[in-house]
Length: 249
Ligand code: G
Ligand code: G
Ligand code: MN
Ligand code: NA
Image (cartoon, rainbow, N blue to C red; front, side):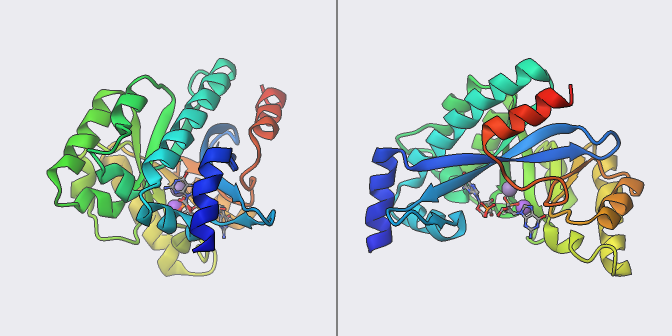
């Protein structure tokens, strides 16, 4: 397809960029982390959503290479931000295909082993993957000191027992549970329960998709560690986030 041709070309021409969405510590209001989000501007100059082009890239076998580029960029940026805040963490989404591709030309863990301040976000499906290479990959990441976060938590099939087994660092509560938090007692109860259970297992919790002050206040009261969402900021270019970090020092 046209899209696929453009995508292959984009890799050569480096037409990808990363934006970074701040992750705010709810108790202090400080930005302590950021999620790297991939952006692609196509030949027509339109910004194409990763939701559209990542499945294509996976099918075409381009994802290891793109993922490698994302990791390198994010790691370089994490190193800069850690000079301002030594505890700063940049999280990177890792597609299940990329995670499973042990024999790919790009060995994920070797790249990451050299990096600090990087967390990988995986979806629950990865934990349930029957492929033993996936588990091995996770363990090697842990050994390399990389943090592991479960993205979109609550929408898949995993249980907290899995999280304990794999020595996960944090959960990101899917924005579907956060969206109506301030309107639905059920959604609030679910978020509260996730937070309590996660803490008992020694995991920290990030609420995604925080869009209003009421949601922020309820999450803070429930003991949620971090919030991410349009209330705080959308994804922004690295320089814009650097300016915010410097201003808040
Ligand atoms: O904010 P945004 O519209 O970019 O995110 C859409 C989806 O794309 C999200 O599910 C997000 O996890 C995913 N995504 C964003 N950047 C990357 C990336 O670098 N790699 C992978 N595998 N997924 C990404
Ligand atoms: O699956 P993942 O959590 O990686 O998805 C990240 C996606 O969530 C990106 O598309 C990002 O733009 C989007 N996003 C971030 N904050 C908000 C928010 O407050 N509301 C909504 N609706 N989407 C958000
Ligand atoms: Mn994510
Ligand atoms: Na998510």
